[in-house]
Image (cartoon, rainbow, N blue to C red; front, side, top):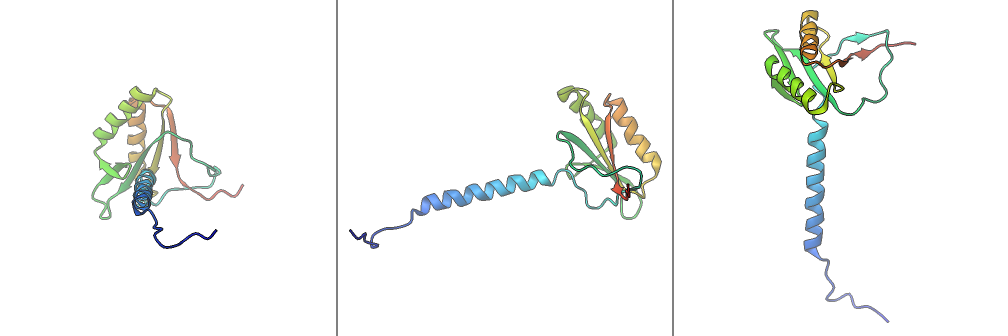
Amino acid sequence: MKRSVEGEEVPLSALIDIVFLLIIFFIVTANIQREVIDNKIKLAQSIHVPPLEKLPEGIFTINVRKEKDDSAVVYSHRGTSYSIGTIKNMLVNMRVKYGDSTRVLIRASGDLPYSEIVKINNLVLDAKLFRVIHSSESKYDG
């Protein structure tokens, strides 16, 4: 028995549905990946600690860097800049929502004055969070 090729069509509506689902999937996953990294930060260098192989899940990331003209310090979370007071409120909300075991990752620019790092550390302590990771560029030889 031979099938006739005439009259058979590809169901276009199903194909269009699949294409739209793929587009939505890639848009959602792209937004999730944008959360952590601020590429404008040139990290401090560390020679004493080996790099982490994998970052733990459920971390609140704070990016801290100077403006290009050194006029101000920028604090950001998930790609959006916030005032230092707003960052503190966000940390308190994280503690209330997830408990005091919430981890905080601080990614600070290597050319940032250490007083800014102390300011962020104090914010984290004021929010009663104690699990802090400081990010740096690894130059570890061990």
